[in-house]
Image (cartoon, rainbow, N blue to C red; front, side, top):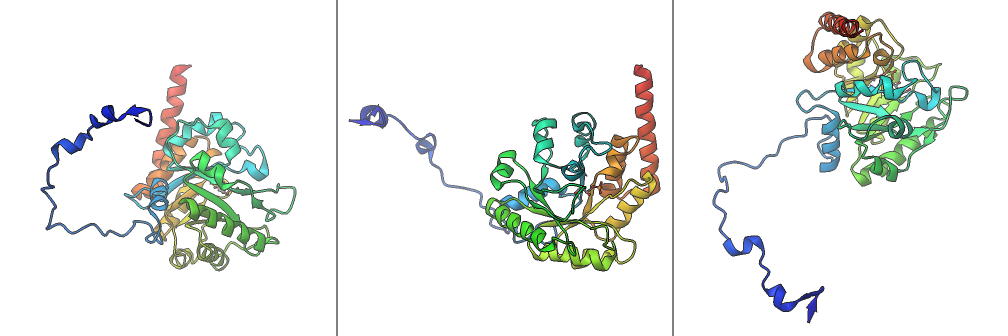
Length: 316
Ligand code: R5P
């Protein structure tokens, strides 16, 4: 009689590799207690293994911080300065980022799949700069998030905006879908033109996002009371760069934010609109991960920028 197409006689001659030399275990390290370490990221201790593993790809476990490169601006403002050709201008920067925040369209069309950096996929959209910005919907199916192998999903939340309720509903839907698949959610606190970016407002927005289940939150830096915002947010807070600033000012902002409890930056324009974007992202890394003082990081930026300029002039 056949057994899945193999005769019984033949099957009996099969042996499991380990069955012919079974030995009792010897070293049980009886004096060594099992590891019960806490997870390195704030608020993440009760998460499942897959969720923690994805977060540990985005945040460096050695520093607890992340330098994310945000290049998703085209989802509502089209070909933004510095992002006209993501394949040309952004791809070379990815090596210096801890994670890439991007839309699925730009990812699939412009970024080689060989990159090993984690992707934070923008998952809401549905409006343009010509219309009300808070009018977003969930713009990616969770199946596609899994297919893309994203490490997290990003959702815009507009507290105080015309479509505040719908944006919180988008967050809830995405958190629920992500929880089913072990994929964390980044809530991005979108600020309408009329909103004041102070600690009171930003603190309200970040706390609501965390309470609704976001695993990390992105907001803006504010000069006064930022440390209270980060203290009151039970999950890691990243800052956006905002409008392009002089490089030293942007480095100063990254320094102050991380000094006051931010777990890093998710920076876009202050990197890709720089004269030397590769030098700038490396200087931001020096501030965020190595705690370099802003002035020192700025010198580092200038020296990398000069080296790059020299290399170009030698080639031509
Ligand atoms: C909104 O357009 C996006 O979420 C951006 O990724 C975010 O604003 C960060 O970019 P930036 O540093 O240019 O403000």
